[in-house]
Amino acid sequence: MNTISTQTISIDDLSKVEIKVGTIVSAEEIEGSEKLLKLQVDLGEEKPRQVLSGIKKWYKPASLIGKQLVFVTNLEPRIMMGLESQGMILAVGNENPVLLKPAKKVAPGAKAH
Image 1 (cartoon, rainbow, N blue to C red):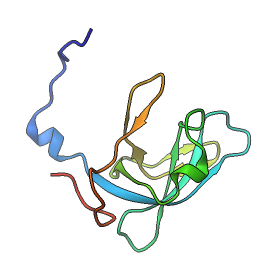
Image 2: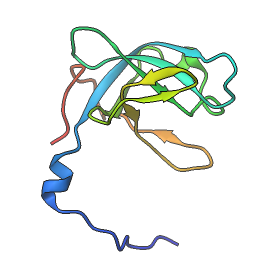
Image 3: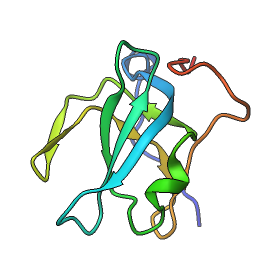
């Protein structure tokens, strides 16, 4: 049963979240981690960003290369397994997460409005 969230945010809060489409240029398993994959993501910047994601159980690295997916790009960097993650991939579902993607191909770094 879906319930309406009781925690609300203002439009000003939402405007602080930077959401962009990125193209995965490389993906690999992280040695010693049961959950994490290391992604290099083209977000239309000078060089790809490294994003770590706990999707290893559901996605093989090779299946992600070349895919365009949706990322939060202005999170504070976080260290996991000794590596820095510079964003967060967006997905829905806990048991079998579905990665969010644009309906058609767009330029890397395209922003959500």
